[in-house]
Amino acid sequence: MKKPILYIVIPCYNEQEVLPITCSMFLKKILELIDREKIDEQSKILFVNDGSKDNTWEIIVELSKKNPHYIGISQSRNRGHQNAVLAGLMEAKDKCDITISIDCDGQDDINAMDQMVEEYWNGCEIVYGVRSKRDTDTWFKRTTALGFYRFMNSMGVDLVYNHADYRLVSSRALEAFSDFKEVNLFLRGMFPLVGFKSTSVYYERHERIAGESHYPLSKMLSLAFDGITSLSVKPIRIIVALGILISLISFIGVIWSVSVRLMGHSVDGWASTISTICFIGGIQLLCIGVIGEYIGKIYMEVKKRPRYIISEKTGTIYEKEN
Image (tube, rainbow, N blue to C red):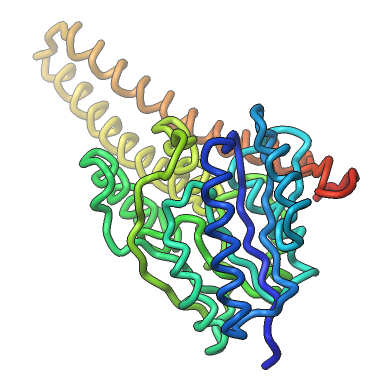
């Protein structure tokens, strides 16, 4: 097997504090792999600027001038982490043999790339980076993360437990993945759908080197909901089952009330009536909300708007839509 060309894809949003620190770590790792003849010397570090409002893009441009292993592309505006990763993967797809996507903050263990590349040499097309433990997380984050994975699995979504977006993907797998055209992206749930031979590499996650996290609770909840609605219709089926159950209970209630009335034992029940109306009304609004969310996703999909627009790349300016 010839030495593969590797592109390390790194999404960046307002990372001016951490990027000058971690960029040298990525360069050191890629040079190590080249020296050990595991990858080709044409391998690159591809930064994807996700519409940053600080000096992130300027830093990327300066890095590309200092070393040919650094390259970068910039989205025309902020589109979110998942779209930024996708933009980088699709940009690299036809220029390399393998990609490794990783965040810029230095939390994911860069040394896990060695084993990822080794697994590629062993024939794996997709290698998932999986956290071995969550000691650096707060109790709340550990608990909610565990609940998230269990809930997603119960919804029928095939997820690799404790895997985020740190993964190696071959160009052949990316070519197949490019046929997935949905706008509602949840990459960690979509890649298992591609198939091909895969495995996992385990590593310990560290504290963020500098700067602040760009994934507060609200964004994590939004990502989780996107994952459920993009990969599972089970909530709709739960609504159907709930509707049947409530209808059955209501039918029994109707029979009971008519029977009581015929026997002449009816008693005015204002409280029970109001409670029943409020309960059924709440269930109806919840179900309508879930269905409305799916309809909203369909609305976004049928318009087929581009998932990203690249406005610049290091050395030139151009436009590309996908």
